Length: 287
Image (cartoon, rainbow, N blue to C red; front, side, top):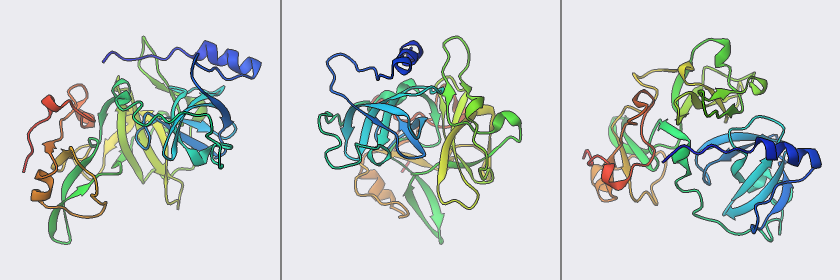
């Protein structure tokens, strides 16, 4: 799929200038604001982070699905895209009872949107890896990034957002760099389609959860393994329903759920897998 470039800067500045939110013709919408300190903007409910919105950012609500709301952000800061999904709890009015009245349910929207954004990922969607825990080998769900190191360089200080460019590599926004992170606990998730930017997570010192941010991809280096992605045996399943995290499953269970092997990214093999290959391109199950 050809890379989609969202040309929104002019319209966005105009909207800021007059205090309005741009609403696509014929589409129901409700305005709101971001209430949390930061809200991750994702390409699909519960999946990959494309950008970060900040407290007070005005948003246009264009759909919802479960606990996720599709928004269009109005912000004066750099964002790779102003459009994506945020948790309902991150919104001021939508988080309340009746706060989504008039906003259409849009479950299933953006299912393939990752194709415009991701060049390689640390593990495919709905995947498991084979590991040995307490002397027992089993297949365990992958629901987290791969532990990595960052090159100690000023350009490798994470930023909350980055800029997509048509005629040059994507670039992180130096104005939104994040300090006071535990850079000994960095995990890697994916690189952008042009291979220039990596999405990582790192917690505050002593923190229990990571902050999603972006660095140049050359900053990301392997830690404790030969690659920045999971190089254990990795499988992708057609049916992952009911499989729990932290539980090791047998080869037979994996085979019964439509198993295929992970496919290394053809364009950026150093950074991992293709997130969700077409059925005809998936390698055979390794067990």
